[in-house]
Image (cartoon, rainbow, N blue to C red; front, side, top):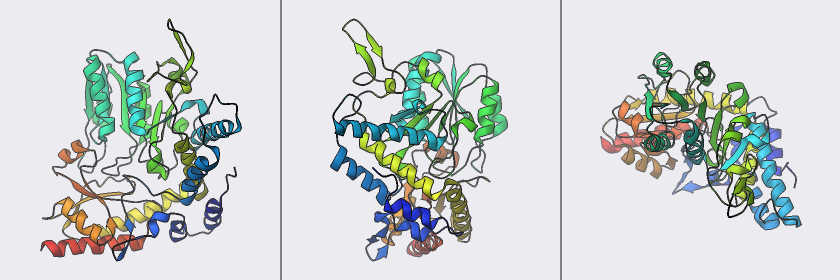
Length: 423
């Protein structure tokens, strides 16, 4: 199976030009070619999920048409090809985030399952009564609720580092909260609700100076910037495939190999065992110890195609282009007096959360949809963030490299229509 498809070949050709050609790349995304009513689709809901290039869709279809079989224990050719595709995806994921070896990559359903896995393995071993788990005030619910469950189970305490009015972690307070009872720091690389990029190198270094391991929720980082888990020195790092131009139902948990070896399994069943008797089960080696049952084989193969696609475009170029697009969009929204941005961190990814005076976010999103502009309205699975800024919800426009300044202009026209309707 060739790794270079017509799609990726076109990407490689387009990115040799000096200018980043988002319009050229958009052709690779079938969903972006449609209209909503009489308006072309302007898709600005990328923090919820990204659209998929044809190479990802084709890779999944090709697996089901040609290679569909279960993996690891079959000796027939379909099973061998399926196993090769699945384990090749593991290797690509390891390379993409800079892991030292493919065994440090565990396939999960997404970042949410990855965090739950760490909570119920690392947490069971290392966190007990009176211990503390530290998170920040800007976390997604997926990086809050698993720790609340663990604390209820163990008698530990969940501690929350505060953020300032810009939506930035208050580093002095954070450092003060890294105490002698802190057993784990779990923190998002990029806030899904605010766009804040946390200074992960410094944060991890501060924790490690005190012997505290760190889990990083990278769901909003991996699709938008170059991530190297070894350079960060993260102990655990998670991301979801569907936010990185891949399929739903697949994600990655990276863990340092020595750490993973010492942890108990998360679930029991097939493939996570070496041998089973009624008296005793011997567990499989890492990473298979954590992958019970038939995995999402097609999802892993689709994720590998998405990683290939992003590699072909170039993560540094994606980050630069999205930064420029964010600056354009921020200036455009700030030019509308009735719009108020929520989250103005000095270091941000492509997330614009905002409110419109006198308009409920859900009403605004409905009118924007009538203009063909897809945004998200609500608490974005970050209710504590909304409470911190004293708003019930925000409108969120979130960017990807296939978005354009013309689409930002369409968003602005849509917002002006919303204001007209409610005036």
